[in-house]
Length: 170
Image (cartoon, rainbow, N blue to C red; front, side):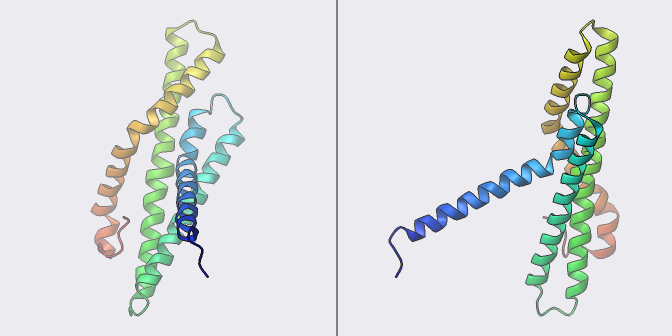
């Protein structure tokens, strides 16, 4: 027998799960950018861990897209190819747009900031490092869309022409 509040509890439980995974996705997806922003303050091993977290997220997302493609094409003769395309396309897009390009960008912004602060101010090194970290963190929201669009253009202009638009990243 179903209790009156059970449907509401299920929705609430689902909403909490969605919220949890959204927070997880955001934190895992931006881990390396945050790691690069903090590079001046933390041991290099912490930065590498941030890349490991981001790479794990990228891999999990690619596998998830592959599972969804497999479920959507259960009776399709080209199922294996469609699943492969979904996994490869998602992995490449995420690796470029979520790990490599943003990590490099934040790294260079922070390196330039630390250098320029050293040349133009007399602030103590810890203040310059914290300022560099703040600059790096504040850069993240501004680089997301341009990088995403650039990676879409890159893949649309190259690999996606080879395998078509059938399982293109959403």
